[in-house]
Length: 146
Ligand SMILES: [Cu+2]
Image (cartoon, rainbow, N blue to C red; front, side):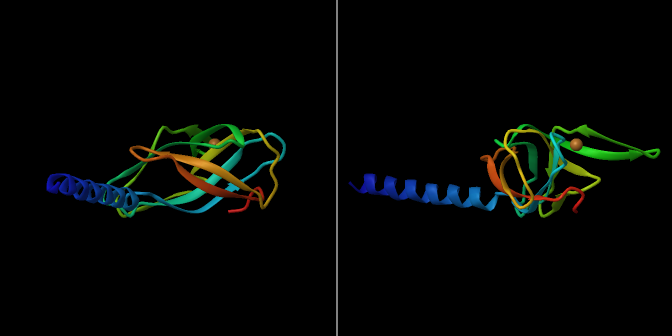
């Protein structure tokens, strides 16, 4: 009987400890917004990731039911020419912030599945390495707003 009780107590402790560490390691997402363009042109997702853990966090992708395809992009200005290309992952160092922002990193939301207007909220799942998918609510903002 004593052994059974000990096992139960040990099991509970292990559960509590692992739950605690999972919570501590979750990325914090702030200022999530989605800038739309007219028609079926893509929208751009901007937000800030805060890594309060002591391990690097690696964002490897995103998805939303409101769009057929979502990619991570970075914009570049080279010799006066603006371009962008897809990136596979973005690493946020321990204790650091990383911002997806105009003229830099952004989520590129392509081919809407629903109509969207300013003020609407869009659910997006962010995929971090070694993490559960993280649901984040993006607010639709006017094109060109920062
Ligand atoms: Cu893009």
